[in-house]
Image 1 (tube, rainbow, N blue to C red):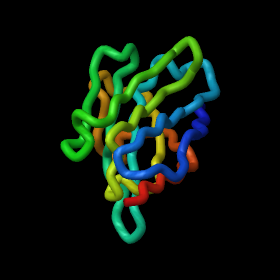
Image 2: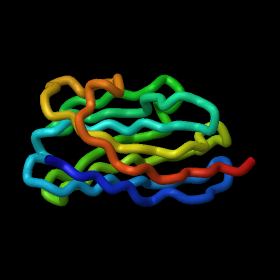
Image 3: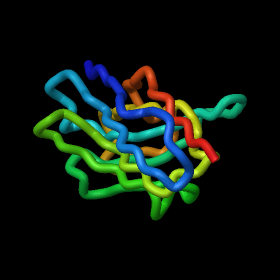
Length: 125
C-alpha cells in the first residue's frame, strides 16, 4: 500500500514557476512508476508527466514538454514536478499517482493504483 500527499501548489503569475512534491508513505515507493495528472474546472483529468521506477524513463504531455520536468528521489520517497513558464491554461488541480507494475511509465489513469488528494495550481494572466 502506498499513500501519496501532494504539496507545493499555489497562485503564480504567468511566466512564473512552481515545484510540486509528492510524498509517499510505504516501503515500496521505489518500485512504483509515478505520474502527474491534472484536472481543470469542467474538464476531464489529463496526463501531464510520468517517470519510471529508477528515473530512467520519463514521458510528457505535448502541452508541457519543454516547460515541466518530472523527477524523483527514492531515498526521500518523493517525486517532483518542476513547472516553469507557467500559463493560465496550466491552472488545475494536480494529482500524483503511483503504479505498481509498469516498467514503462504509464500515461493512462486506469494504469495507476494509488492516488493523492491533489493540490491546486492557479496561474494568473
